[in-house]
Image (cartoon, rainbow, N blue to C red; front, side, top):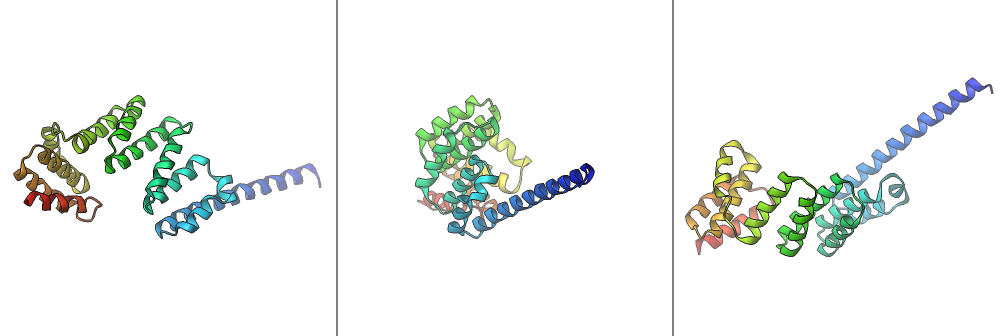
Length: 214
């Protein structure tokens, strides 16, 4: 075989390998998504811990996907262990912010003030002021019973719709609850329930409405 034919064959083989690798990687990713969507957790973890996944996906990506699975199950002990491990890794700025914010909202929902305070400091240190201010606002309202954001939120209502409008109404209702203003609390709970009736917040809104009657 002369040199020209050899190099042509070599290039063809390399192209086939690269294309095949990308196709198989795409196939694995689809399997990850489908097993999660169908809540087939045993199959998901088998794929995540398999040789092919370890070869094609960085440790951070596999751990992050596992954390999503633990949240769906839910396995709260594993979720918190995985967040601790993710936050201890050497992360780039984008990964650091993503994991920190996701962990913050998880602990906010679990009402763990200490963890939220730690994560707020971490988010602040990353220099993303807008993200930090939003997280701080949620912390102040939901865990510190503050109502300092009523005016600014009311001004936003006419500019948003759907989910965003529902969330602002919910946060306004919580602030009026903190302020002991039952009339306005009920008003914004009714508005929030319309926009968020199919969301995870529906149960919280209904509970607040029941409490508001007493």
